[in-house]
Image (spheres, rainbow, N blue to C red):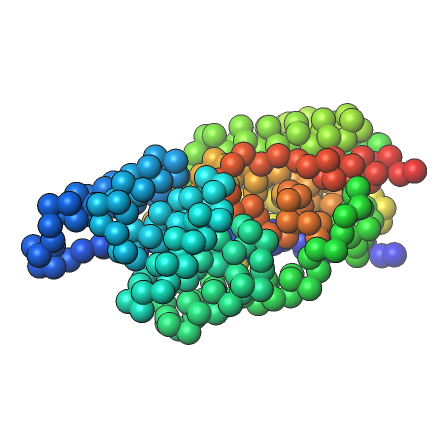
Length: 341
Ligand SMILES: [Zn+2]
């Protein structure tokens, strides 16, 4: 085969959460009871916490707010989102179903409902909810991104599930079976400084290095790496960007571009996004950890995706705000790629 140059991406994922901007206009607020006003105040505090990625704190306040002001769809919306993010997917889904039964609910509640269904693994319902957002807000600020996302989910849903084997090597090496050859070890990695990139935090570089350590361990040390201070001669170049227009698909959070001659990888450029489309959202350390694990998996030669939503190399990002962890299947697959039987 000739020199292959192709692109793999992460992978139609939404890091973004969707929030409504204002809960109660001032004039309307004058008619509220003391309890309801307290609930509004809690909602506002919780919203700031959600924007900061503090979902557990937000969830506690919203539970209280729902008690003080029942049947308020904006409380149900944000509460449902917070519940999903801390892993209480089913109760979160129920709140989001309640929220979206209000005809006046913010359109973004439909995106959050889609996220809950995605976390549950019900992608058809996730697609349906995201389409509902597009139906009620065709010109909405998230519309472009949601269209790309619905298209990606719709094609991805066909490949998911029905796979209970111990690894996903076949899918991960399609269409190219390539990896870093032994003469490339240790792999030379350059991480471009992220200072000045909006949304960048120094933690991101540490998260990237920790993700690489996880992959090295998972490979039973078949892989080694060495960081260098200059891009010259680096095998993997990693840089941070806040500009989704630099990626091939606007629905994505990062990508890895390969140059290689099968079975040898020759060079990989990785871009990791520091922000999400909604400027109010924040990429949490947990979300970035998932992104880093996923993109480094691609950079190590897992060019395809796992069809199982629990694996880091699934094309869908975990919607739970938890640190990324390689699964047994992720580990087995990288082992097989570097030590074929
Ligand atoms: Zn991917």
